Length: 478
Ligand code: HEM
Image (cartoon, rainbow, N blue to C red; front, side, top):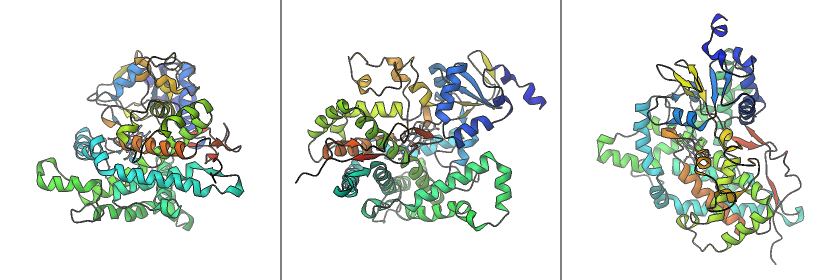
């Protein structure tokens, strides 16, 4: 109590209950699923530095965000990341996403980065992504039965597509959901694993107690990591040079064998990285596409222009050509601005010696949180921030972003921990959106898709409150 009352953080503005307990912040984040909105409202009320919890501070100015994420600044990921893993809560070993040691992270990142560079991705996976985007758009059409008014949930198919793409990349073998129409059991196990790990983080005593009470209903949660490792073991087999279904790790292994100085990956490391890629690469991409469809169908003029633009794309479509389409790419950027799939505040730890932000000294070990949602919905950078306006991203228009506004857009994170899968995600989004708006010209939102159903629930990843995005496809041509 004395430590709480005398904390140097007490001078920082914020609601007084947050000084005493992490509960208000956790409650708004994990229970109400309004983490990003909560952060935004605190910054609007209290300014660019705000007290989130006894040891956690929110920062929202571009200078401060840059200072935290700058390469070499020494702000490591917070322990929170150990709980967003496919291993048992806080039991490691960490994968790229969780690593807190700078040296260890740099080595692993170097090893994985080549496969995720634009040239590597286009060379190895473009045809596969094109095929899966085509199957997803066909699946959407199959679900829309004429007798039911041709109403279909697009989100379901984006989920299946994104999981099938990343499972092929990470495992060398797709989950096959586009063929069966079913989402994979892996996604379900990830959800269970994340829930139980969050319980371990937030209420460790409840978690510890629960581990000692054999209640059968809890087993699927406590054993989720075993299921995940079992499914991911296919990634290890397919990483070998002689495997027929090769994956992103195959080339790392064969290069590692040739030039041993760059290091290589053990079976366990492959297992963990493969699992991480699936969980980081599925929902993020799918939710972006879901909100893209919602935003475009809510703006008929934008829809018309996008439909006209993608109608001219020639087959086989190439990502290098799609990248040049102005409306398509501006629509994607605007979707990622208003609906960043991962708006969570990327908590980092203040390094040795402490740090000063907005005139307040933060001692070593303080957790600092910065969310892309907060800057991307700030009127200072984006006038009329709640309005979806893709023209912000076109050159020389009345709404064109300034250089500062562009710096306030960071949906893929920043610095050395920037999303490694962003080029793959963009390729999927470009291809799937092109095919959808070309195939279903004149699609409309179904009456059940409303502002309320599409309200952004979020804790780590955003998702629509209604769990679906229902659209009405145009009548089939006779
Ligand atoms: C629109 C889709 C996506 C969004 C919005 C997104 C967003 C992000 C963000 C914000 C981070 C930084 C997290 C932090 O610093 O705390 C991140 C990291 C990461 N993302 Fe993504 N992501 C997307 C797609 C993907 C895909 C498709 C993959 C897999 C191929 C992926 C794999 C990763 C990994 C492995 C990291 C950790 C990188 C590191 O720490 O070095 N992401 N992502």
